[in-house]
Image (cartoon, rainbow, N blue to C red; front, side, top):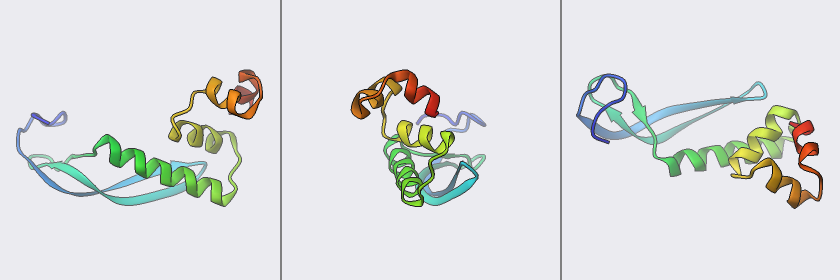
Length: 101
């Protein structure tokens, strides 16, 4: 990263930052490795770090038995599946997945 998208500063440090996701009314929080702007303290997360966090959230939603449309859609997206791909895996029509979501 060359420049902060928030304040345009060019100085960063490796640190950790809090990340929060709310899915289906459930709040998930974590302290993750991040690159933090020295100018405004904005945190930037690597894509792989975000992906692991979101997979953890999806896993916890499944463990909790959350089967609402918003939870189902979050889990599908966290797995990187399109609606069509999930429909194929489940042996249903894509419109069915769309209705579930």
